[in-house]
Image (cartoon, rainbow, N blue to C red; front, side, top):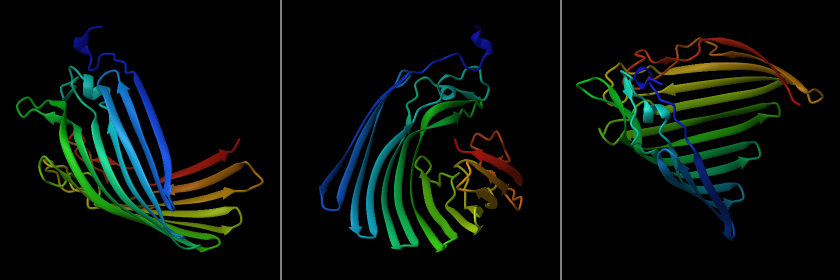
Length: 290
């Protein structure tokens, strides 16, 4: 095969892993779960990732959890082996990027019909995989070139307002910092609201309504495009399912109000007007349980 005419030579990857986990109830109302996973990749080597969860049954209706975990993303074949590409070249010396996360979580069953959850989190990413552009040639090469940390919280409510009506929703806030530039890391929303209503208005028929609101997304450091617009979408689903039948049918309208919803495209800019999400979409789904 003539390697001067292709972007990526054939490659293979073999993965071996081992995982162990155990749980200890070391005193009344306290539980510790610990685990570790070891992965071996034939193309870049080993990575070890532990996880811990300390659970305290604080009260009969309140649970408190302290969580720690590490995860990784292996470099893709394109990031490792791209050649002859005028835009992005691979780098066979890459390491996996990693993330360490810490969470403090509370789950409160306020009443039989109302549950509230709160999560506080902090994370730190190292060796982030990025295509770094050469200012002279304009060609980007994959590098372990990023570090990032962030913190935030998420709160959730689930309320059975009536026997045939459930209301639920969550609000998330986060702030992430690119440690190389000291600026906001961009791309992810600082504020995200999700709300849902499930109404069984007659037997076997349910009307589900969802609202998704994404706001305050900054550009990545060095991206000089105008800020990306906030968006909100509404989806409606009419669903039928009877207990005596294995068949079900649903009618959906996604993005009911045809919002111009877009997700940010990454740098270097190859899609200048970002990634458009689906416009108003109509669907009919037929399901069968075997």
